Image (tube, rainbow, N blue to C red; front, side, top):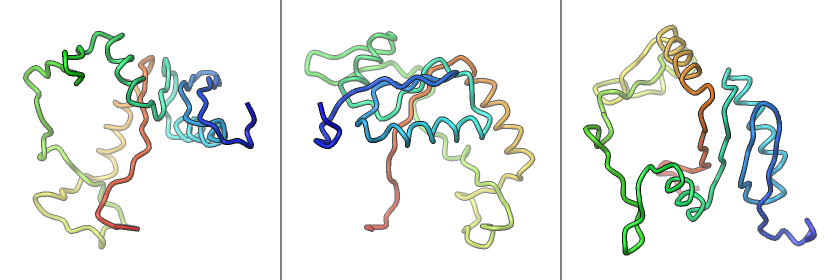
Length: 146
């Protein structure tokens, strides 16, 4: 299969210590290498596997394989959430720092956290993710139509 044809293909990309599987197109190889480098520069390393932009069927397969839920007779994936069933709006914080401080509408919704507390949380997250699989989905969010 020719790269010039820009056909959808699935490839495996290995780069110690991370593995990235199910890349969407071969042309994304450089972008994925850059993503791995960026994760490592931010202190994230030693993942078991990094899954990036898995298509819906592959997400289903992974979730079923991991016994995280089941597929109902009509097709949707069903999970038991336990006692934590939704997001916690009171747990959302924005790092208060000089370059963006004046652009944030601070209040009950956009609550500040100082850089030192954020750094402590980041270290805890980095430690927690050691040896775990990581799922990354490139998405867009926001109201800007551009």
